[in-house]
Image (cartoon, rainbow, N blue to C red; front, side, top):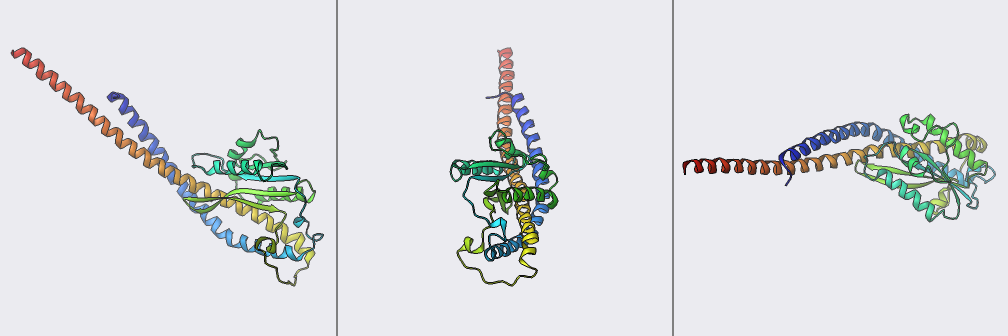
Length: 291
């Protein structure tokens, strides 16, 4: 059994750790509220716009909509979205595992380029021969330091430019979709080429009257919709990160509390045993003097 000083030092250390994890839980809870409000307000708009985009894509000729071109898969861009910091359970590892799974299975015969958004996924794939850091976008961790539509649009514009130029045949975004504070779902979402509504659910789309003209829609609405889809994925990931960290820190605080209680019980037992031994020594010494 450890001596009293060792146990007391461990109790002090665990108490300090519990204070840190509890504080991190409170910070994540405050950030989660703002992030959750942002994604819940954005999601209905983004999903409806994506539905319109799918219906629109089915009615346009391929020559009119360059972002719907279906090409043989030679070069695939994977956009991996993670956080800049750890201590959030399996949040980042799930993204890394998903990207590794795509590299090993679905796109094993393709030239895969990985674009990292978030420091953790960048650290995991920075030595990958297909790792790509577009000019003008900054470092991987910069996006979540200032998460705005303007900044995410730079990444979307780069991806659209690469697809339009033929340097990318397919673009996939891998991120955590926010369900609630305790649940995040890893999503593999095709960004380009745009899937028409009938390709997604097998149903034919109806006829549409276009106002303004098709050319204006192609030039304005489709790029804007793609930028919004990427921004929604980043907002989802941001909310998921804070939810995962809050849950992880809550569990860590509970575990530290249980360990602290066990150590205090062990400390009290050891202290009581030491006191009993001292009493026995005093009594034994007194009896020796009397005898």
